Length: 330
Image 1 (tube, rainbow, N blue to C red):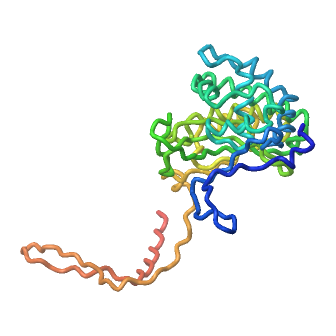
Image 2: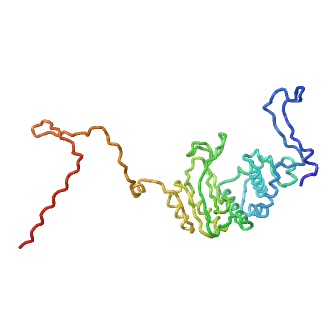
């Protein structure tokens, strides 16, 4: 894939001050120093090659072509653009501009059909929630195919866990769609995740959904749990499947979705007033006696003068003597 003498000619290009002293070093430090990867014989992300071969073998492009339909301008060649976005994310890109790393150096010799960042941005802006659900179908089928080709979830025929939780990811800029402050106080977007794992395998994301930052944790959770359970079952979790979640998902709809699809659940119960009354009372330990004098009450006599009533005695009363039994009628 690479030229034999590529390692000898590869060099970073430093852009900075050109003046130097007698030792050959710059006279002063410049904060505008940058490194440019412009050698045509090297790739910056060589690890993408085996990952992309695995994606092609699992049929990522075919699944996108079958399930994703974008009728707006910029939505053509969806299989190539989705592939470019996935490759950029695997390589570490976290913004549209970072997708340019797929066009550095000799990346064009390894991958074909890579689109420019501006083209990918136009493509992503054409998506609606219905198109996102189409991508959910692609991701679910891709996971099922990968699990069939390799031991992705070892031991899933005995025991598997499905963990559901949400996280808030910080965003920047004033025009970010859906960005708002959530329960953590950070302005960003809320991501709902479902992760399937076994005692002997690494966690795998079975479902994901992006929501606005101020969304409640349990918003859309029942349908999301159903989708994640179905994906986990199709991926080979034929044994006991346990849904685990915190108290944010402690509601009837989530529990009913789990039991309806044959899964057990371990959900933290929210301590409400009713549950607190039903819980056994904790034993009380005697505390220190208060030095505050007991308040006495007053009452008025028939003559109109106020008489003071002494407080009740702290000593317990003696039990009343039993009454004599009545003699039976003669």
